[in-house]
Structure formats: C-alpha cells, structure tokens
Image (cartoon, rainbow, N blue to C red; front, side):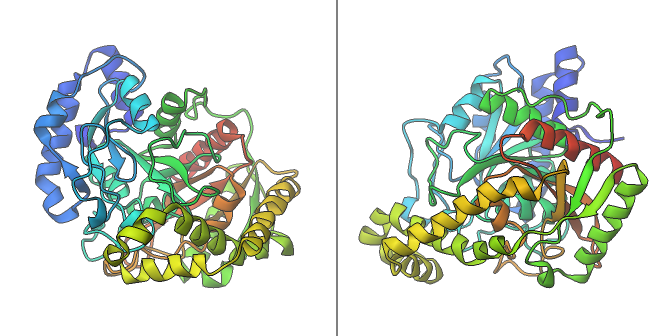
Length: 420
C-alpha cells in the first residue's frame, strides 16, 4: 500500500474533495516524512513545521496540498536567500506572483527548497534521496529531492538551462518546464530575461497540469484521460548525442521500441544544422544577461560570489552588445524554424540528461540535453523511464511546440502510462 506522503497530488486532491482525507492528515504525513529523512536529504533552505501547520487551508483546486518553493521565488513569510550568503535572512514584503496564486488556489507552502547559488553555480547541501552520495541535480535541487522523498507532492522549480528537467530525471520524478512565460515571473530572482522559466515538479504528469493550471489560471486539460489515438513521435537524439552515457543510448532506443509496440508512429527527427548554433548562443545569452541582472551583487558584494560564478559573470560582461544581439538573433531564428522540425509529429522524444545522477555533491551534472529546448521556449516534460547501471533513476524527455502545453502534457501522460 502506498503511504499517504507518497500519493500523487491528483489522488490527494480527489480524496480531499470526497472528504475521505483531511488536509491536516496530508500535512502531518509530509511533516513526519521530513522529520524522518531531511537530516540526510537536506532539501530545505527554510523549514518551520509550526509555520506550515498554521498556514490557512483555503478552498480551491490545490486545497490542502503541500508545496515546496524553490528559494529564488520570494515569500513574504519566509526568508528568500537565493542560495547566496549575500541575501542571508532577506525577507521580502510580498510573495512572488506564482506563490501568491498557489496560496490563493489552496496550496499550503511547506518551506523554501535549496537552490544552487542564484540558480546557476555552487551546489547546496541537498543529496539524492535514492543515494545520499549522489547529486539530486540542480539548480532545483531541493524541489526535486523533496518530491522524491515525500516531503511534498508538488514543488516550484525554475530552468535557465536544465534546472527542472535534469534534477527531476535524476530523482525519479516528473518535471514540467512550460512554454516560456506561462507562469508569471514577478517576484523571482531573474537571472536571464530571455531564458528563465518557472515550472514545477510532481509525481505524475497530471499533477503538473493541475498545479500549473491553477497557478497560471489556464485550462491544461486532464492528462489522465487517454487520447483517442497514439502519438506521432519524432525520435530526436539532439546535437549532444555524443555525450550520452550508455544507459541513455539504450534507454532512448528501448523507449522508442516500447512506444512503437503500443501503437505510436516513431520516426527519426533530427535538428537542422542551424540549431547547432544554439550551443554557443545559449551560454552567451545566459551569462551576459545574468551579469547584467546581477549589477548590484557584482558592484557591491562581488567578494561574496563564488569564484566560479564570478568568473562566468565576468565572461558574460566581456562580450559587447553586438555579440549579445547576434546570439539572441540565433534564438529567434531557431524558434521560427522549429515548426518545420515538428511538422508531421506530435512530440519529440529526447534524453533528459547525459545519464544517471553522478557521484558526489560538488556538481549537479551538465544540462547538454536541456539548454537547446529552453532557448526554443517550448514545453518539456521528463517522466521516469527506468534505472541506470547503479539502480539510479533515468528519465525520458518529451518536447512539444510552443504554446501547445495542453497537448504536450496529454502526450507526455500517454508516454508515462506506457512506461509505468
């Protein structure tokens, strides 16, 4: 029998609506799990059980559902420290818009989850719940680990390169990066204006649709409802294919075969040469925009930045405006050309990460299979798809067309069901 703390959010919500489950019972199950495991997982940047218990239980689609908030999103009643000593103890006056709408929809904010330094560089203390000696991924480290460990069924995450999809895959949960701009960023510590995207992590695709639908006030459908036909799938190894670990090459092939046996039409679909330019354009835009957004920190608290982050920001500042404009133009050209890539298919199937979560906590892994999709502003979903050679979770990534999140979630749920 599945323990209460491990139920999906949609299952919890259904039982809460039916009256067979009380919000207090859900919260206490999560708090018990936190007490039992967070001494090893270290998912929280701020956690106060008394504060969580005192939170109002408002009616709404998220009524009574515990939520973790990545610590780059402001909260009026909790510190918002952005993974940096520069902002230690900082208390904003207002919630980020996404957090405010989650509360309005009935969510119970359990605490702030660990992020890497400004959601970019130096990792925090969070460990992978499946093996404490391995990274949970980043930068949404605490959100991914917390959902996987049963600390909360839903969590906010953000992505500039691969900070939703990669940690979700490493921790064996579902991660959803919506189309760019779907969730309002007001009250977020934004680094890259062209890339930063708020998304979510949960235990099922339907959970993600429920959460984002409530926060963005959009109808994202019911992904649990089976489509009338199987999807047309474009198998896309992506320009980073040479970096894939053996378990990832085997996973993509096996997943394609399983989906084909279930009725999907699977055909190879590679990105044209134009898209290879994103490999250079993405880091330039990311670092140049991040350096600009961190003007105050660079000018007033430079010595409190990690050496690696300072080096990357200075590299971003070293490029002139013309270089940045050229890189942004690559984004636009590829975004415009993406419709041709997906012509005739419903979704692309591509790796979520290089392989399983690496050993050690000094790095959160590399986003080589993620940055390209973030730059394209398209919706991406990773679903659990198996285990690696060390019995660590592996995910597979489903990519849709920009603005077609409802359809992408429906097809992702179809893939999720076939891989279960």
